[in-house]
Length: 410
Image 1: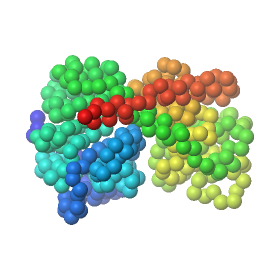
Image 2: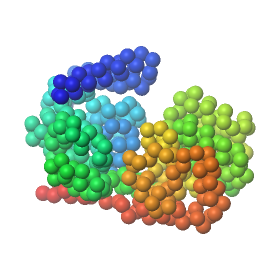
Image 3: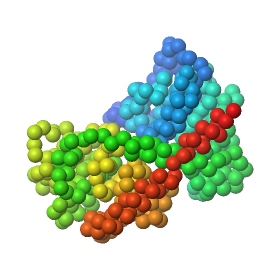
Image 4: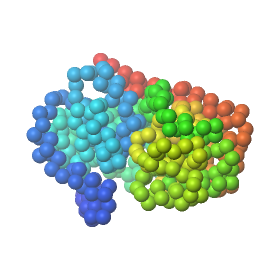
């Protein structure tokens, strides 16, 4: 099975290499990993270090409170941050939280050995669902503690299938799991792994911290004026089409801010074409216009979304018509009812929000119309859902402290 895994890693690299010829993200994935050992071997690495790994930007934000807590507890120690995806690295490559920030090298035995030799970690934290055989094995062989944080497991994953022996071997190299819920703990126990703690999700700590820092955004105030404002975060075309149809039919006193997941020109133009020509304005084109005259504001930059939520009444989070929804907790932390598409089953917080009537899943135009009309027209219902969402976040903070206390109890 290891041979198949190694071949699979090489095939994946080769496919990304082919795609990189015409895909900018793939090109960054390849070029960012080239010559990593030569580059970092020249740097004077102050040992020992703490290694934090994240798949992408969302996972980085999820793990941010843990890194902040580590930095506060051990101000003299250095932090290594690795990313799998360009969407994480390119945006956070200059984060003050990391002393050394780079792409995770390809998971080969040599890279894993070289990485540990260069950066000399004394502890490693992998966030949520990143499981790499060679890196885990190398850490285990060097007796470097490895912790998985905010982990969440589902019965259908390979770890819990009859054919999952190799996948279970990868898990066996982990020192301790900090899981989000009891189901995950029970699943680990079902395959003989008892080194776990139900800590919850560090994203609650992250969004709770964000919700205490309101950024002054005069342009949003001017745009909103006296209207009811919907914030559409990390939206995709399927989401945007539904929201556009609703706004066109219910435009009086309502506006939408779109912060799409991708900000390529064709994606921005797609949103613009959904509306009457005079309705839309891009953030990058704001000059001296009377913003109150527009119905739709499109945020064509990255990193502003979390600052928009306190200015809105209702949030719509995209991705639910694709592989899965994006971050619902940021909006909930600001006290907003949250709407999203049908593919939310992998996200515990989405299921929780639905159960307490603070989150709402839709699968059609009619379903979106029904819930938006109810939230927009019944202010008491909207405020109750908003308060419930905020209380849900408040009640679930504390994962960072649980992890820090367990790992560094001595």
